[in-house]
Image 1 (cartoon, one colour):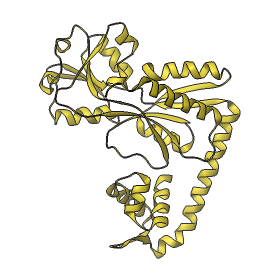
Image 2: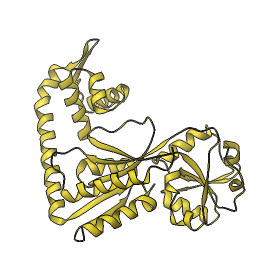
Image 3: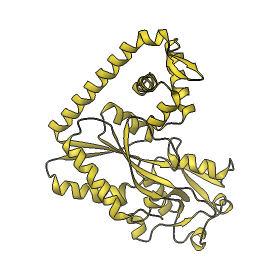
Image 4: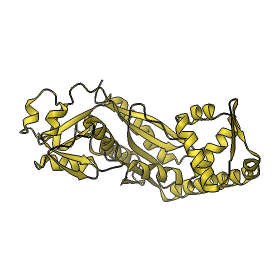
Length: 303
């Protein structure tokens, strides 16, 4: 059982409709409905009565509603206490999927550190699901995640688009692909491919791009930074958002470069996320504002 499931039930009850709740939570209606059904199966109770006119709380659901509200209130108190601890410890914790760690995150942390010399910034590499869980539980103040244009935004988070880029093929300058103006799927399949592990957005994107076809040889790694290092060492090529490569030290040194993917219009978004809360530690708010301003100055990696 997850707290967001209870939050979804509360939203459906308040709004009286799965459709309206899905719109407010920025979820697709089928995704919301399936989440609620999973909770119902776990509890063994039909919490909602689903009618053509909308969804309302069942009699069993009304009996459980006070308990749901109590759990959500307790979670809010826990989050507030965790936020207060962060104020006392003078630490800001940032979870990141690595995709723009070097080009964007490092200059931001350097600027923030100059203005907040007594505040420690802890950067933790994690997968997107882990970041969302830690944000919900108060373990992270901010989260940097990738998503493909059109992906659902998780409920309960304030999300700000920092960068909008496109998937590209990261190669060494001496790779045969570097001589091309763009890389086709057939070109990519002819090379050893360094893929991101399951759970990363770029893993999902590459699987969709290749339509089930397999490259000549493939590696699997955990995160963009290791992928770029493996490319620099000549082990193969990888597919990453262009904003993960532009400005990277390896790219500035001429060790890696990139080429667009032919006939592909996919957009990858780098999102800054934080939990919606009435009370936000000032240091976390300040770091959030540095992220937003720096990203605007950057202007994004691609039009």
